[in-house]
Length: 276
Image 1 (spheres, rainbow, N blue to C red):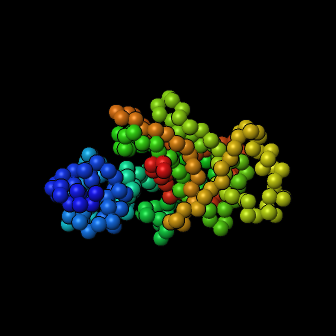
Image 2: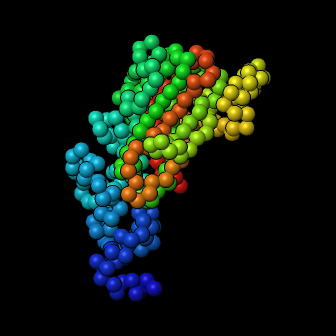
Image 3: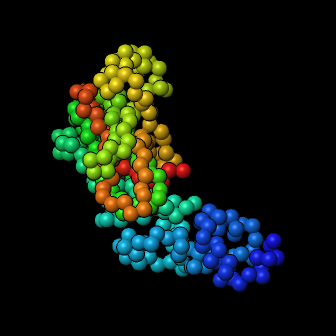
C-alpha cells in the first residue's frame, strides 16, 4: 500500500490529505518521511484554516508557512482590542473564543459592587472581582457566524475564588443558553465547591439544601472543575451551530434568588469551545 502511495504525484497526495483533519495529517507525518513534503504543503493546511480567517485577524501574521500559522493560532491570540481570545482546536481546526470579563454584560457593574484589576494569571489586561453584591448576573453574547458551522459547542464561565470570598455557595447559580427568544439549554451550578470541606457541609448543609429548593428540588447541580491553566470553570450549557445560522448566542449565569451578600468571585470571561 505504501508503495502505491509513493507512485502518486505529490500534489495528489496533498489534495487527499487536505480532505482529512489536522490530527490525521500529524499522524501521517509520524508514520512516514515520504509524506513530509505533501503533508506540510500550504495546499493541505489552507483547508484547515477557517474560510474567514483574513477577516478574523486584525492584521496579517508573519509566518513561514500555513502549517506554522495554524499551530500559532492553536495557541490563542487576542482580538478586538484584547477583549477576546481566539484559537483553533488543534485536532479539527474548529474555532473557539474566550470573551473577556470586560466584554460581558454584568448587572450593577459599578465601583461599589465590582472592582477591575490586572492579575498575572489572566490572559487579559483586566478581570472583574465581586466586592459586595446581592445579585449576580453575568451575560455574554457571540455571533453564530463567528463560530464553526455544523459544530456542537459548550460555554463555560472562567473564574477564581479569592481567599476572602464569602456568600458564593448560598444557593446554586442558574445558567442558560439562548438564541433570540429560543431557550437552548438551562442548568444549575455551584461556584464554590464544598465537597472537600466536610465541616462546612456539616454546619451549612441544611441551609444549602433549603436554598436549593428555591430553584427546583430535583435539579442536578454541577460543581466547578479546575482547568489546566489554573482557572476554575462551570458549564453554562451546550448548543449547536448549523450551516447558515445567524443571530446572537446568549450565555448567562445568574444568582438572584439567594438574597445574600457575596464577594470574592474573580471572573476572567466566558469560554466558547467545540465539544469533544
